[in-house]
Image (tube, rainbow, N blue to C red; front, side, top):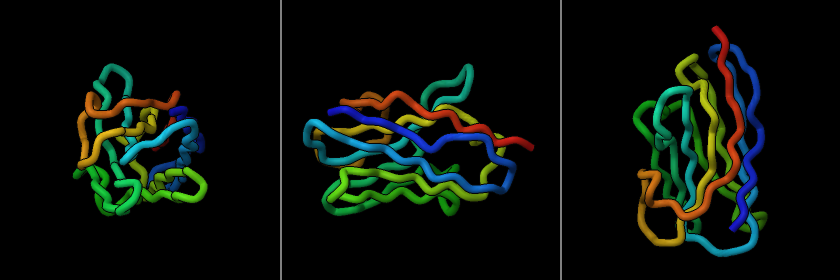
Length: 121
């Protein structure tokens, strides 16, 4: 499975961005977004079950971020609003072969290259 993330950029506090992730070359059961800020570990942001559409969010983004997917296009999205400086990070999309909700980095099998999101105050 190949994953290509895009849509990052520079935005002011309170602004919005939409990240996209294009998937190709294989099958998977769920996908997710993670982020990694400088000097910190990669952390879970949101996940979506590919067929059921069930979604899961980290507490830090609930109510501000929305994950979605387009099965026909093999695309996943992360709509981010109410952005804060602490949201600044490289955002990665990931895919998981096994079923079930997954919030741990080790539970994902494939990773995209990351896209930078910078929120300026």
